[in-house]
Structures are given as structure tokens and as C-alpha cells.
Length: 266
Image (cartoon, rainbow, N blue to C red):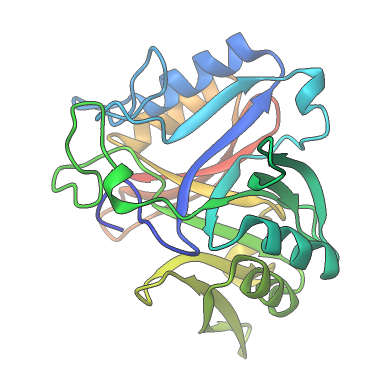
């Protein structure tokens, strides 16, 4: 994904979470995400560097008590009501379902059979993808704060990808993997243009130890410094990987209240 986000069925629009100890969490994310000489996220409100609300950090309240402490990506679907019905038929659950005065579905928060939470929203028109300065976010040439990728790691990725194929309405692509000499398949969910937009992975090989929640991948300008701040602010680095140049290329982290996400260089 080259821009801030991609429009179309299956693509992620944004993500949010409702947390206890909101002030501490706000400090954690503000410090962790705003590293480097040209931060991709703003300290004061977590908007991205083009003043777009890609991620939302809300306060935990009675209204959101049923939501798990997970970052919940908002996936675009063709028909919210139909997707809700398919989720229920396939063993998922509905955490919240917003409708207008006429009873028309607006958006919903669902949980899959693994208890991974996610939102569904109608497909966003391309003309609505504008930043705070009025420029388009679909083709950002300069580095921009965005959700670069989504991963879900579960015991049975084959069954889970079928759930998302039917609920979200997207195509799926097999990805050949190998673990201890045994070959198996993980899966990519594809956007309308056939581009991978999210991964559904078995909890084995490189994904051992990751929780069964949607991991949003956020870019930062200085990943090493971000990881130092994760620890300093009371979070945990669950897993980190370096490239051949010994620089960090990926890290899975857990924030102070227990929510997981991934960081990558921006």
C-alpha cells in the first residue's frame, strides 16, 4: 500500500481501541510513535503526519465494556448488514451494530471464532480520502503514518481465512510456508485490485508466540528508538527482527494495558 490507505472491499480504513488508564496509554503511544527527525505520528493527538485520524485511542467506558483490549482494524465491505449475518452464521459474534433511524446498517464491530475483534464499514469513496491539508491520501510519495499491514495468527488459519473470505467478501491467496521441513499454507486476503491487504497465519514457524488478535503494523521513523521507549514506558517487546544490516525491520510489542501491535521502519 503506497498511500495512507486503500479503498475497496477488504482494505483497512483505520483502527481503534478503547483503553483504561487513557492518560498513560496516550503518553505511551505518543512517545513510541513519534521518533526520528520527521515523525510519522503527532505527539498531541496521534493524527498522522498529514493530519489524518488513521488510529484512534479512546477512553474505556461502560459503552465499550464488551470490547476486548485489542486494536480493531476497520475493514471495508460491500454490505455491512449482509456481512453481519454471515459472521453470525459462521460462528462469529456481534459486539456492536450501528444503524441509522431507518434501520440501515452503518457499521459494526464483530468478533471471529478465535475472539479476534474487528470492525466493518462501507467502502469509502476514493474522493473522500483527503488529508487535513486537502491532498489525496491514496498515493502519498513521502513517508506517511498509515496502517501498512494486518496480520492475524491463529491455530487454524485455513478455517479462519474462510470466515473472512465470506464475511468481508474478499478473495484469498495461499502463501507457501515451511516449518521444520514441513510445508503448509498461510493466507493473504486480497483487495479489489488483487493486492494483498492482510495476512491470516498459522501459529507456527515465524509466527509462534503471537496472540490470536489482529496486529496492525504501524511505521515509525526510528524503530530502535521506538523499542527503547516501549520498554521505558512500561510496554513489552514480544518479538523483534533485524535485517542483514543489523537494523530492526520488525517488532511485535505489547502496550502497558496488554494490547498488541507491530512496528516497522517508516
